[in-house]
Length: 486
Ligand SMILES: Nc1ncnc2c1ncn2[C@@H]1O[C@H](COP(=O)(O)OP(=O)(O)OP(=O)(O)O)[C@@H](O)[C@H]1O
Image (cartoon, rainbow, N blue to C red; front, side):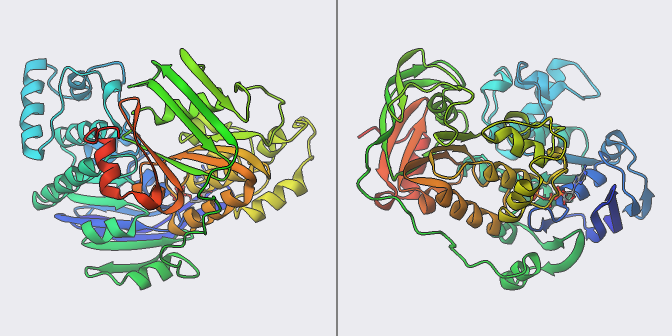
């Protein structure tokens, strides 16, 4: 049994945790929910020994634990499955599985891997390179590695982000099997549906405090009102601004080929017009990401032409700022500068960067913080913001009247309220003659927010339809290659 008692955590003047208490029992799945910035990640980092606590007690099977380091946590049987598994992309599946094992004989480990795979119904090829796997497959290997290492308390952080529907049901079956075997599972998620489906108990965090606890059957309304000031309306989707007949071309791909990424792009020809909101569906690595990077001008195609707003795109610095923006999914390593503050990001994004001036941009940044409801101050460094607040900062940097907004996973890791706000905000920032193109692993998000869907499979577009004329089933068939191009 894992008991977390009155945990507090200060980061200088910021009090991220003000007294969190919860008990996770063996043979059960315990959900942890809370709006962005509630303190979930900080709590998990403390339990896994990555961060020290200011005060409070962690008790494992009745014994007080220091959890002074990740090694101590691992040796106590605590294993964490991160959203992005921590693996070695250049090595094979087997080599990755061997990493951290007591016995290094490849044949022994191969047999262990095979028998674990049978138990969980996974089908990973031990010889395959890790970089050729989807996020869902990498997650499966990481889960098996944690179990092989003897983890009996498993912590999962938003585990269904970016994985296919089939992988999600495989993961859920695996978690249920682990629960039957007596494991203690902590599941951090923003998806109330998943919490209801899987968890036996749920704890709600708010502003660093435990504010509610429930056992099955959960009262969804009470859960939501414990999480937020006001209960978000179901299906809080803003009206789609897009017209059904697209206006003038904003983005054109003409027979575009690229060998970048897992499947590259194989002869993509598509025109996206003014007023469209286009969702790119596809299993991770099917070409959507390469498509977005080529559209922004971050990579040049090997064959074919890309034009945005009538021109060949390039990442030219200093061009008109409101032409196009690209928000990648890996916020900290691709979009933000760790070490720089919110104010410095706003100065850098301005028309004339002037970040050397010590106190410039304060009022402008304060205004952006208020508009985007960022939990942080002008001088907060971006790595100290919670994931959801990093996304709010990125959104606040989009200039008004932007003509082409390109995004990967626009609402990854955002709570329901923040996700609804994000879509309203994006529509406000868009030029009336502009277009939004976004990749999302959530088909529900594509169907509710986009006017048109492009489904990618192995570098090709297998389906191109208005969202009002397709279904989740049809898109699922397309992204798994089971639909022939019409
Ligand atoms: N290293 C740090 N220094 C200063 N403040 C921090 C640091 N890490 C987290 N915080 C603050 O602590 C609070 C809780 O953040 P945390 O990341 O734990 O929230 P969260 O519930 O995981 O949010 P999200 O769902 O957005 O990921 C936030 O206000 C955040 O800005």
